[in-house]
Every structure is written in structure tokens, then in C-alpha cells.
Length: 76
Picture 1 (cartoon, rainbow, N blue to C red):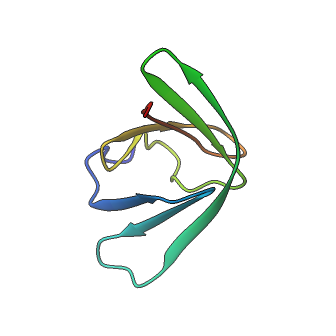
Picture 2 (cartoon, one colour):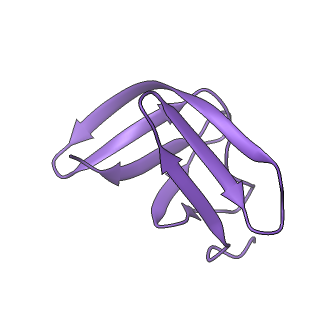
């Protein structure tokens, strides 16, 4: 299982999420396909996987998904 405390920077933009990992110059850019607000959290459904197998968190945000990533963030 991958360490869940990886050094990752996640930037939430307008319809876009970017992920940068420490030690890598690559930036992963994913479009937000949809959002569901459930109480105080928002699930953002992305168009690609932005997390590695076994990761359950990116930065401060929980993440899940097998074919695309679902990022859970605080609702605004």
C-alpha cells in the first residue's frame, strides 16, 4: 500500500484540478465532470485518475476511484 502522507499539492480551479507531486516536474491536470454536494463536503468527479493505487488521500483531500478519481473537498 502506498503511503497516504505523500507530498502532493492540489489546486482546485474553476472546472479543473491540478496535482503536483514533490520531486516531479510533471503536473496532472484533470477536468471536473461533475460535483455533488453532500452536507458540508463536495465530491468532485474528475475525468481521469490523479491518484496512485493504494492512495486514499491527496494533500488534505480524500480521494477514491478505480477508473477516474473522486476528490472530496469541503463545500464552499
